[in-house]
Length: 142
Image (cartoon, rainbow, N blue to C red):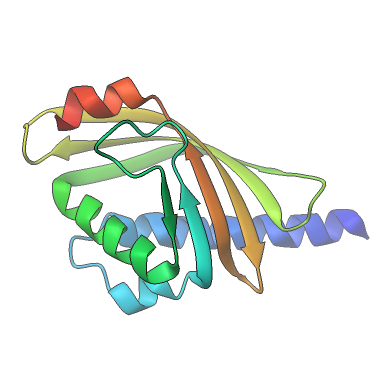
């Protein structure tokens, strides 16, 4: 019975996360639809973020505004090689994936390997913690 709950949670987390990336890569991102992916008190964390980037965003409106800004800073976003993994907590899922984009300000190609932890509450993303190599961000964006 627990494995069924975990499989359903993993599928729900995967669907929400792919919607997040789909909207994230859209320069005309519909902000209301994007905000609706998150709980009102959601937290989005980047533990390895170097200055001047935020390490933590609190609240879906702040998350939405931040992501809308990031969306405008690069084009041709591509995300591949997804691997979603269930945990013993049916509302927490890990994701590994790769991403790339063309940075508008520098003209450089950005490539990254990501690991994220997605925590759901009431069918929405309540917490997303994303790990990546900060030097690859600095090399491409600054």
